[in-house]
Every structure is written in structure tokens, then in C-alpha cells.
Length: 80
Image 1 (spheres, rainbow, N blue to C red):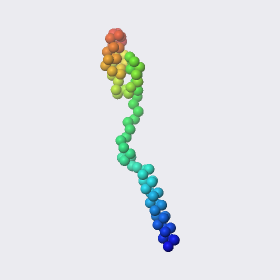
Image 2: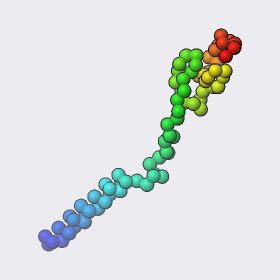
Image 3: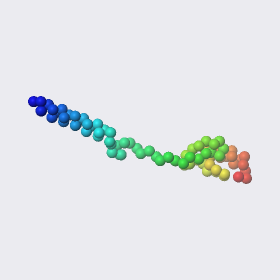
Image 4: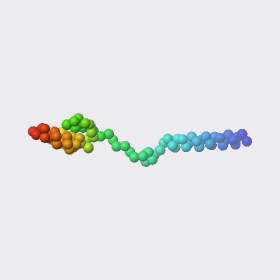
């Protein structure tokens, strides 16, 4: 009888260990959406705000955080 209880306890212990390992190690598809890689940052020429390059607006002389800063810079620097 002791042997049967020992085997049952061993099987339960193995089952618990297997379940905890399976919860820790998930396939990549089950982890959720992949994060985007870091984007290069640029500074607005007018105010110095740093923003990702793909969000910056190009203009004469550099990049800007918005249309208002681009227009203000181009108005104050007509030859740039």
C-alpha cells in the first residue's frame, strides 16, 4: 500500500512540475504581438522636441514636430 501511495504522489508531483514548466515556456505566437524595433529619433529644428524619424515633418533646413513649427521656421529663415 505504501508503494502505491508513493507512486501516486510521484505522478502528481511530476504532473505539477510539467504544468509549471509549460506555463513558463510558451511558443512565440502565444506571447502576444511582437514589439517594434526602436526607431531612430530626431529633434525638431524649432523647439528641440525629440520624436521618431517616421513622425517628423521634413522642411527646409531640417525636420520638425509639426506643421506650425515648420511654417514658423521657414518664415523666420527665408534663405535657409
